[in-house]
Length: 165
Picture 1 (tube, rainbow, N blue to C red):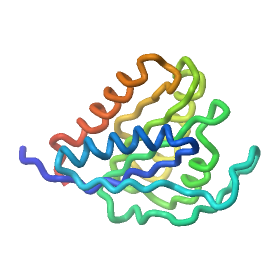
Picture 2 (cartoon, rainbow, N blue to C red):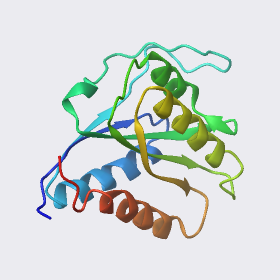
Picture 3 (cartoon, rainbow, N blue to C red):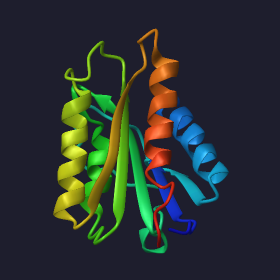
Picture 4 (tube, helix red, strand yellow):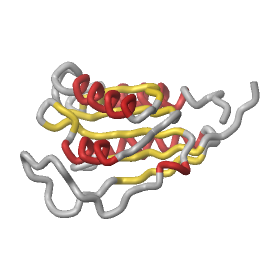
């Protein structure tokens, strides 16, 4: 089986920069594996307010140019961050694209919001025709956070090791 590089879009919503820092490491891993990986940080217009369900973004990436996608978001209030949820609701299709995902949170266990946020993301992906790939939760307050990040980067990066376009 021959290796063909992928064109990967890495779409990130990061409020504090924690999720973004993991995404940047993942981007470096994918670039090191010979893929093109464009990181796009979603920027909301105005302030993030509790209870707000719809957000406007300063610009949006063109997802049609990517073979595969990775979405990353923090967990807010035991659920997917509402700006990322709002972004997903605005997507029309992810038809046939391999989509990986990860979330970051400060809770001690993934079942305290991380798993739910991943489930919400999976639902958005599947209902728009995407194929769910690797997924993970990074616990930002865990003393083994660095190991979790390395494992996630290897896990998601590894799924593109020998894929053909």
